[in-house]
Image (cartoon, rainbow, N blue to C red; front, side, top):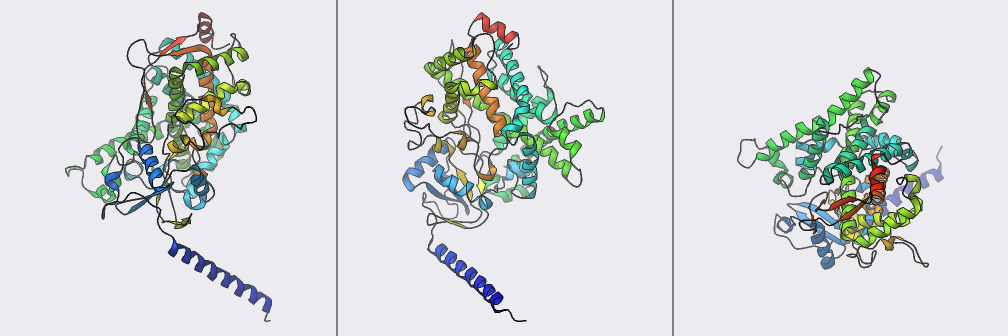
Length: 503
């Protein structure tokens, strides 16, 4: 039977699609690429790309050309987002098409990091990894069961700082690894010369080296990956081969450890043992579990360390802020115990100093790049498919419209007072955007905060007795502070408190 209303509905739907397509086509015809520095034929802007302090150069381009800057590198389009507003509008609100990662030929493909969550292409496997992580650390409520571990390992950090104050960075790295490896694999880190720790640190260091934009020519000319290793200039292939071996050890050794412990019924409950016990290990499921666990510590340990390290730097450089934070700890906690997570809401200035240290120096000034999966039109500009999307987080954290006097270290900006709202939380930028937001953000936040609070309670952070206190900062995916300082127990009572384990 002929149903006119149904056919009218179908015709109307088809007409609507045609009209929408026409509107989109016309808007794209009218749209143009965003402005940016003029490049050269064929190679585009490749010679203008900065080799250090990239975010500052990108911010200057933003002042010259506008918040959205377009570059072209040998035909590869790149979009720099210098405004947090645009990053939120695109990466958060249009996450379906902005959640992919570009392939890093050196770090992702040749070394093998493409299977880690940080570089994994957006798709079913990515969602599976995120599902695994959500079961363990996906919310503040789930994180609560891990807080005793974080507190215990941080009290051990205090002992390390007391006994070896000159090994600050190594002490921080050991503590971060101890927390994450216990959580991920039930692996207890040895105090001295832990073989797994050495592998983990080497693999992560090489990841950041391999993922630094422009560090390897093969990332600019991907076809170079097919050049034989003996050809002059192809030393990157031997380098990638060595780094891949280290990476595979980092992924495989702790996973095998868990399986061996489970076979003996001697495992410490962990992320990996829980999944191996409860998931049906069909197909590549075990591969996914192994790499998700590896992504936990590869994705979070170095950034956590850098955040704590930066906080210590700011306390040295800004002693008035340190004294005020210590006075708050003393008033709330007293001298008989260490701060705990239960005290967090009662330490607003400590919280503010922690937030301001994250804002004052961006530990991941550009984040990891996103990839646009299809053409998009935004603010009248055509953003072409396969564009590499760079979020200039360093710029967001130093935007005077968001944070007045951004060069000034001012924890008070994060405190609401006299009817004035607190400044936007820098963690909203630091942990990434959209569907690529850091899945371990609650663990990282807890680990950094408790370290800051406990260190303030027990140590004075001063300028070094010898040498310059002026810091320098590395460039790349993670910007690490490099400085010397003196870490001194606040009193004999705090020494006793540290040695007693904080009780």
